Image (cartoon, rainbow, N blue to C red; front, side, top):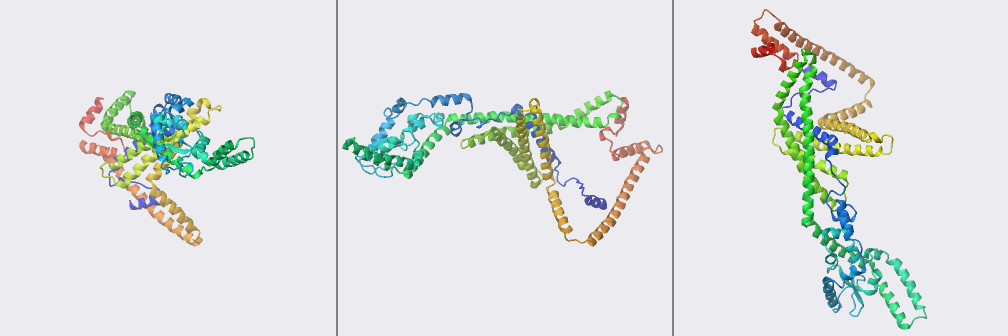
Length: 554
């Protein structure tokens, strides 16, 4: 047998015996989960997937970018942030108690001569004409859908100590409702205009000296505006505003409730999808295990009735594996529930900073589901080595992502065929292409995981052979070839001798099985041995008197 193994190794075909650890169950479990995941993606995905742009929970970032969880939310926020007017502006200035209180505090601070103008960086003079300015403009705050989503009214958001600052009246009124940083960036252009205005006023002989002084003072004050001071003040005010609005919303019961509700809904859907995929696969696998032996032995049956009876018997026996199958379904249900819930939470958190599309949401979901399966695989107490479990865990995660990518590929193919003559069957073509590509990619990845060392060794061997081929002489090659031929001839002789021994053993068993001169008990036992050796289905071999009686009764 050693020579035979050596021959097999030379021909690059490896034969694997049973591993010293019991990993068959683990590998079958991983295979079942991978196939169930594929069924869930391609067969059931379109029925269960409910992913949407933005993740399904409204965030301040998303609504500011016109991405909403529903049309109702969109309509409500648009209504709340439309129609800004002078009346609204006045009600949030002179009509606001917060505004009046802060205005009085700033006016008192001005008297000390130590108050800094945020638009110039200089101290404000005691007699300087000033306005109480909203650093983040009142109009901008009113029209901010993020502020409206938080439930904060304009007065609470705009009239705060960090947003209301005394500043030079001339500069403030030249800003109007402009963004302060934009205003600062435009200062060089504005200064050119103001300089021309100053020269025009100086050269104007039609206005009174008093009016001329007033106009020139106004221009001089505007020329004092400092871009760096304005931008610094704007950053500070906006940071305080963002903290105020975001903390108000993200710590509210509305947001937390919507997040949990959305995560629970996705968990339920993904759990149901995982169970449906597992049930479909387990049923098909069970029927396959029952039917294949019958199909292979089709001609050995005497009638269709015998086939049906055998089908019933095998189906009944297959229920012995029902407990294991239910465990797999339960595990996939838990993975779907947990992965769906956690991925929805993660997606909502991501959407607080950037908007995700529905495909990204699907990737996050499938990643979390497969991660849950992988973690369970790694943490389950078993004799299987950790290295094997890590490999199988990576296999689960990778194949799940491949299935997700394949599903998105199918959608892209279907969409690309929308305006072509193939439009009526675009979905069928897209699904077919995705299934084929996913199947090939999955098979390749699984093979690489299972035979990684062999692949690496093969690549090394090729490189080594190429390197040797560039240095070896023709005489050396000829000598190596002749040695290999001699070696292979010896191995083939040993293999043929082994085959002869095996056939001789079978012939002896056959002689005993059909030797009518033997005692019936010995002949009966010999026929069982012979049937086992030639590969007869063990369930069809008669092994006792009861089996014989049952056979002839039927």
